[in-house]
Length: 250
Image 1 (cartoon, one colour):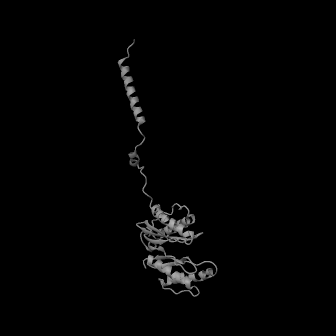
Image 2 (cartoon, rainbow, N blue to C red; image 1 turned 90 degrees about the vertical axis):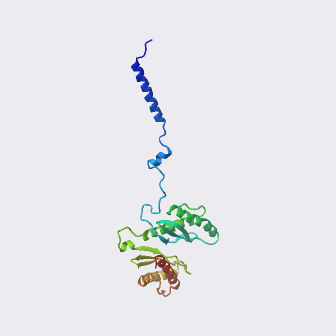
Image 3 (tube, rainbow, N blue to C red; image 1 turned 45 degrees about the vertical axis):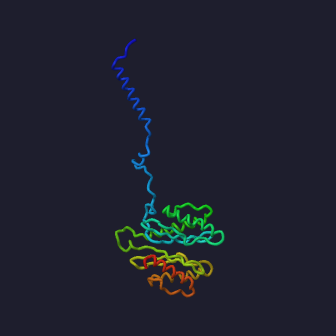
């Protein structure tokens, strides 16, 4: 039998070695638990409430009351360091079965708001309307908190302007809630975001509220006269206005 040439044996052995190495490399896992982090694939940190938009201002802010089939829902937030540290419902459906639904749903919604740092939270089972109202008022509070945050414009009065909403004051004919815009330490605008509605209240509100708004800007305080024929609305307005001033630092 013809013997193989020595050079041929060397070539064949080398080829076999290379093939083995290639096979071993092909069997190596594409990645390992540590490689994703090294390549920047680690899970991102929890998204802040800023969401890439304007940051939210520190302090306490109350969202507009959201009307639901079973009553109003209104959320108040406490913000520190640009993050929600506390959420609470200052208004929620009450009476009959609503008491049980509210007592079950609201604490869970409060907790969810702090965890999510946004209004993107899940509804609580069995409390669809309350959950929807909560989310609506929560988003309103976040919008106000962002509006109250000083804009990064390099200074100036415009950067100091902020909007503050007082607590809703309950009256015999419905809640009254006042929002003020403050710039340079002065009230530049006052408006009622809630006022009695329905029946004769519509006429009273349309007559009284513009005059109360004007009086608040002129007085630069809650020491304003009641509007004749609108005693309850005026009292509620002054109470909510004082709350807004307290939040704004007097």
